[in-house]
Every structure is written in C-alpha cells, then in structure tokens.
Length: 406
Ligand SMILES: Cc1ncc(COP(=O)(O)O)c(C=O)c1O
Ligand SMILES: [Zn+2]
Image (cartoon, rainbow, N blue to C red; front, side, top):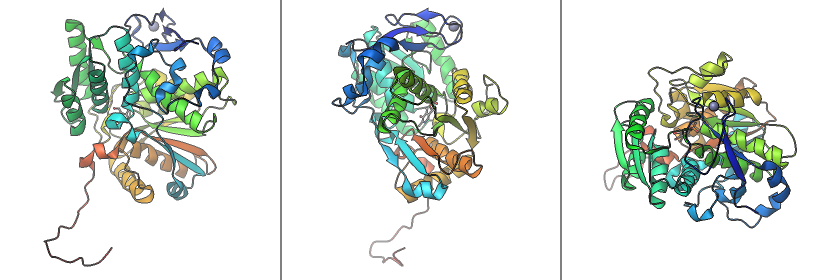
C-alpha cells in the first residue's frame, strides 16, 4: 500500500490538471486547485478496519491526504477532536440530537492546526524554505508554529485588531510578523506583493491546495465518529470557507470509497456575521459567487472575510446539499456563547457561538426539524478571546464576607 493515494491537482473551473510534485498555487484561470486521489484503487485496498489500531490524530487518514513521504510529517498531535453530545442545549433548542465537534482543544487552540499540519508537511516535502500569509489571527498562529516545528521560515501579516493571543503565538514562534491597520484583505495585498518580489511560498487561503486537505479531516472524523453515518445538518462559521469546502469534499470522497453507505448528504450551513455576510447575500440572491463586503466588522474575527477566493465552492456546496447561509448579530452570538457555557460548561469561541445561534434560529423557523441530528463546529477555544467576555464581578476587600451564596 502507498502512504498516500494522491494523484494530481484539478481546477474546478476549467479542469486543468497539475502535478503534486512541484509547488503549485492558483490555476492559470485564477481558481483555487483541488487535490484528487486514486479513489478506485484506494477503494479496493483500504477499509475502515485499517483505522482500528491507528493513533487518534488526523494522520490516521494518510491515504486520503497529500503527503507522499511520511518523513516530512509535521505534527503536534492534531485531530480526532471530540464530538461532544449537548443534551441540555439540544433540549433547550428542541432538537433531537445536537453534537459539538470541538476544535477548541487541538494544538494552537483552533481548527487551523489541521490545515497548517498538512500544508506545512507538504510544503516541506516540496522543498519550500519560507512561507508567507495574511491572516485574521488563528491561521497565522497555527502556520507559524507548525512552520517552526518544520524548521521553515514564516512571514505573517495580520490586522492590528486580531486577537492578541494569536499575535503572541506568531511572535513567539519566531515568525516575521507584521500588523496592518486594516482588514485581512489589506494584509493579503501586502503579502501578495512580498510573494512576487521575494519569491516566498504563498500559503494564503486557497492559494495553495493542501490546506483544504487538512481541514477535510473534520468531515472524515465526523463520519467515523458517527459509525460512517452522516448527520442531517452541519453548521460551520464561514470566513474563507475552507472548512466547509473541506467537509463537503471529505464526505463526497467517503461516498465514492463506499464507506458512507447512503447517498444522503448533510445539509451544509454557512454561518456568517451580519457585519460581514457576503456568502449569505449571494445565497439569498441565488448567485454562484459573492461581492466584496464593504466596511466589514464583527467580534467573530475569524469570519471577517469580505471576499473569499473560494466563494463559488462554498456556494456550490450549499446548493448541492440543499443547505443554506445565515447571518447572526454580534450581541446575540455573545449571549449564545454565555448560554452554552452555562448550560453545557463549554467555553466556545465567538465564531462557534455564531454557528450555535444559527442552529437555534434555523430551528425556530423550522428549517431545522425537531427530529434532525445536528452537528455544530466550534472552530476554536473561547479562552483565546478573553476580551469578548464582559461580566461585572464583585470585588471584595480582604476580610469582607459574602452577602449570599448565589
Ligand atoms: C475560529 C475560527 N472560526 C472560523 C474561521 C473561518 O474559517 P474558514 O476560512 O474555514 O471559513 C476562522 C478563520 O480564521 C477562525 O479563526
Ligand atoms: Zn482553471
């Protein structure tokens, strides 16, 4: 058996193919490239039983990942995050079954570790020495730390308002870190220029093909954790949309392998903030691509992406699964964050809270049925965003007594 059954890259727009043995970025037509595998051979040579004794990390699916030589594997133990039942919240929302795929407990504190682990490993295999990216924070944190582990240099540009802890993660890793007084789109323009002038390896969202493959493992894991069944609905906080594209890709690959028996697909939901909702706007109008969202602003920093390069892939996934896109407001998502902590003891990130709130709203309008099985992605740890919690706490003088226990 091969370590990987990767075969080539393909452009979803014009079907141009490229090899996986040299660095590749966008297709000549400007579209992101997607990774293809020899699924026919893999279906004959690989089965769920092969996973039984493998470590509980995302590399357990190495046949369906792009790294060809395990010597370049760069891992901090990422993946196989828990699929946590939420009995109190599901009752509160009147949903038969509600699970949280909790990405808050993986290395670097967000699901971005998945894309970074696979992307950095593949970059190392391709002989890359220095990578560069714009980021809203979590991706830069993950990529710079994984780059450090692989002994690669990294150059990261992030908005000055990005969560401070992510800035510290990059700085501590030894990355060449710059802050921009603007948005991720402004950071992107600066990185684009540096890539052109200094020949850095561009790992901006979807400008290299392998990050999706890392994020795809969220979909592989959900299916495996549910005994190779799929839920009715999956909600995902959507910025660049890579996670949603990846989950959809994973489920389709599992169907083609015959591991998921039914041809039922979960309805995929892209959740955005009312302050930055280009995908929602496009979906509402039945469009296949989105327009730049001017003056975007949201407390859920990871989903502040005014125009995603892969918007058409996200929208395709929504249409093909009969899913939808929905926006929620910042004040309400913070209320939901508090409710989840109080009802389930989970401190989810604002992006994850947005996805939970969307589930609640979609249940209220009956888009989600009472007997649906719903999976919500909590994409990061709430503890990475200490400033979003503003609760008055009584301060006592030494020797003072409590007025009441409550
Ligand atoms: C916590 C968190 N959730 C969601 C997202 C959005 O991710 P994607 O690009 O996959 O849409 C990000 C991206 O920065 C993030 O940091
Ligand atoms: Zn193309």
